[in-house]
Length: 288
Image (cartoon, rainbow, N blue to C red; front, side):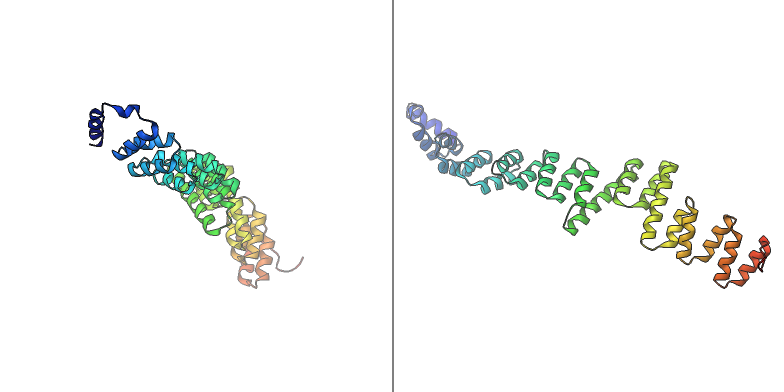
């Protein structure tokens, strides 16, 4: 409707509007409520406050961002860029004023790898990790999350990666899931992946990792059970340390170390078992 009124105005005034100076044209257009066109004239004239007023009224957000920049009202320009999803404009503006973190925030929407690099450069590792997750660079994300100083953010990031690994497993991407579980230190889940892959050396590798991990936590019997198929001497040591006499005896007998099994029974004052071993395997009950 405003355009119609303006057209009538031009006819009644013999189109003298087109012969006016730019400031006069801007004033006429504003008076006729054609704020967008008035704003363009004001911006060309570098009358930025008037241009801002016009663009605000017509909700010309893209142009308003530019005018606010000209006025040095960067926070307002950034706010509009965020609200109205002008991410590229927001990113370029933030880089211009050297607000690197906010620039990374905007870049995360359309250039996540670049955003991750900016975040890392500023020490915002959690945010960098989130950017890597967007493009499924899971190991880069893991590196970032592990670098987080905030334990809450660190745990949250690692939990997200655990969920990614679980999805990989259930969608039968066992090799990728295996690698990620190993990096996360979730050796039990990695073992399930290795079993699905049916790769013997991977199964052995994870058994040994679980054994070492459980031994470090002083879960000696559990450590021994995982080590036993691949390292019986170390498994036997952990059975001893875990006071698992029956398991230690079983392993000694399997290794044909009958006398050691006999001595173990004597050490634990288990005379019945010692006698059975002696009679079954012809172990002398007295020194030769």
